[in-house]
Length: 248
Image 1 (cartoon, rainbow, N blue to C red):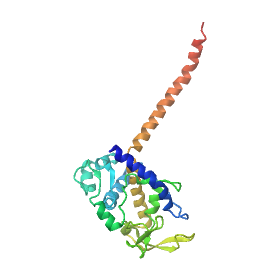
Image 2 (spheres, helix red, strand yellow):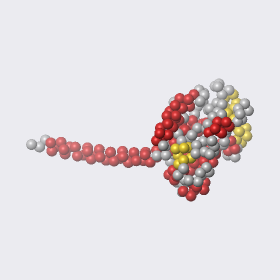
Image 3 (cartoon, one colour):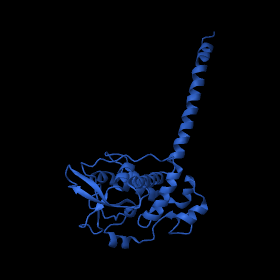
Image 4 (cartoon, helix red, strand yellow):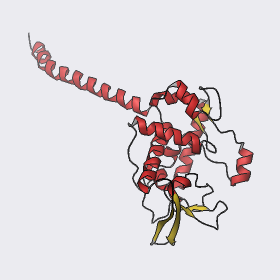
């Protein structure tokens, strides 16, 4: 597993430069809301991911039982989130074979274990890229799937969340300076509600890329507090030590 993890990180590092190229020079990434400490948002994002993303995208370095860290009970995980396996200790993998994915989509959908880190570039954090990407799909009859994306031109991915967002069209040239997306067919959610759904999904993807980040930062805070307390004792005691050294 350690070798596989190192391999995944290396792939992510190699993808980073290309992730910057995938965004047009005139695209301004939108800032993703920080919901890393919002347990309800993380749970909602996990539900969206397992229902709509996990059909094609694996998260092979994330196990279902780790979802207990964001407040799910084991029974909730089994009843609401496990569609491809019956063992709670299994990693999040898709049933679809790689050969089938290659034939249907022309490319194997990437593993989402480290997507947030892979998409981090000079343009901004990976969560901003994904947040903007998932809100930038538009109808394009020239594409095999019928969809294209302003952030990732000629993307092979189908807009799996279209029923919530609705259908957008592109006005203007995506390679030029003037272009915008216009909602022509409303979805089940209002634009604000859809942005909220995407923000929760992005928060979960960010959590999944490094599940131990939260506990590690909390431990780091306690360590810093302890060091400052020890520093205070050292400052208070230092004059006394100097005085003792001066005694004959």
